[in-house]
Length: 230
Ligand code: ADP
Image 1 (tube, rainbow, N blue to C red):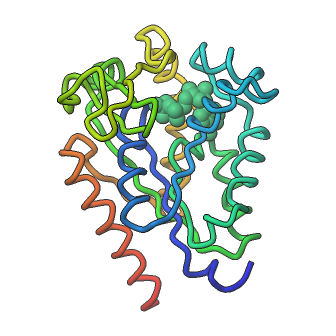
Image 2: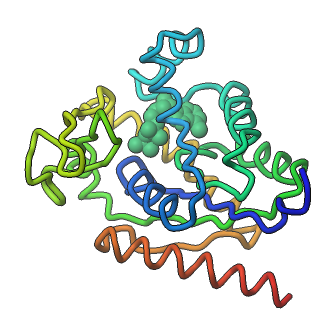
């Protein structure tokens, strides 16, 4: 990779299931013209297409567990080599374990890219189950709604494209509880990992989605200036 890599934008969104990572990733993608890399979306696509990866991942996802680090790291590495990633990317749902974060740092170094800006979306635990069980996604354009907080005006159709809205099978309450447990156990330690590296920025994920986007962009621009001047 050439020196373009050094100027690339690498943003990681951290936060529990339902914190708004997907919504924010899409907004950042539009603002900067860099792709969203969502391991959850990639896995759901593989399940839909019945690929070997999809067949292996399906039961794990249905139980609320995590797919193995090796598989996920390989998937992300391949994705970052595609041409649209040359100016960077926004990661949503990856890394999810400390092992994945270490592998990502090695990958960024190998690709001569800057270290990531890591934004932790902090949300009140009480609202979490409603955030997730109320989530609806457009089958056609991927826009995300919430029937309690930000419903589509044309429910069950998408305001943007008229596509059909659906609930993810793993957003069922019993599975959500297991996902939250996995998050506490496996993903929470990441926060400490990035804090020790001085890369972590926290922000209030309970604010309105547009406010959160604005703050994510401010954090990113602020850090970029810091790097340029240092
Ligand atoms: P959410 O962030 O709302 O929990 P995602 O769409 O990111 O959901 O992920 C859905 C499921 O896909 C996870 O519960 C897990 O089984 C699997 N998955 C996604 N990303 C990863 C990852 N980085 N490592 C391991 N498993 C993953």
